[in-house]
Image 1 (spheres, rainbow, N blue to C red):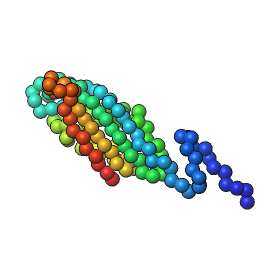
Image 2 (tube, rainbow, N blue to C red; image 1 turned 60 degrees about the horizontal axis):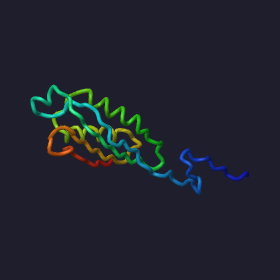
Image 3 (cartoon, one colour; image 1 turned 135 degrees about the horizontal axis):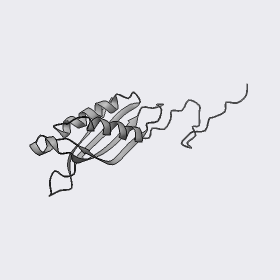
Image 4 (cartoon, rainbow, N blue to C red; image 1 turned 45 degrees about the horizontal axis):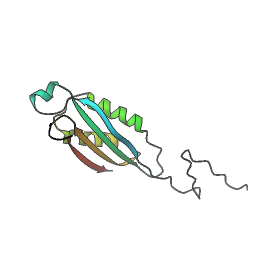
Length: 131
C-alpha cells in the first residue's frame, strides 16, 4: 500500500497526521461603519446614524472557513432592513443570526453609535454568545 499523501493546506499550515483537526482561527469584521435606523428618540426614528460594528466569530473544529466579507454583507443587510429600538436588541439578533450558521461555535458582537454624544467618541454594547 503506498504511503498516504497529505494534501496542502490552503492556509499553508500542514497537519502532522491525517486526522488532526484543522486550526481554529477566527473570522473578524473590524470597524465596519454603516448608516442605521436605531434608537428610541424621535430624531432616531427617521434619521439614520452611523453605527460601528465589530464581530469575532470562532468556528467549530473541522468546519469549513468563514468568509468575513460575506458576514459583513449579511450583517449590513440585516441591520438596514428595519429600524431597531435598542443596541442591546440588535446585538442579540445579530448573535442569533451568526450562530445560525452551523460552523460557528461562538460570536462576539460589539455595536457602537458614533454620533450619539458630542462628549465621547462612541457609546455601545458588547456581547459574547456561544452555541
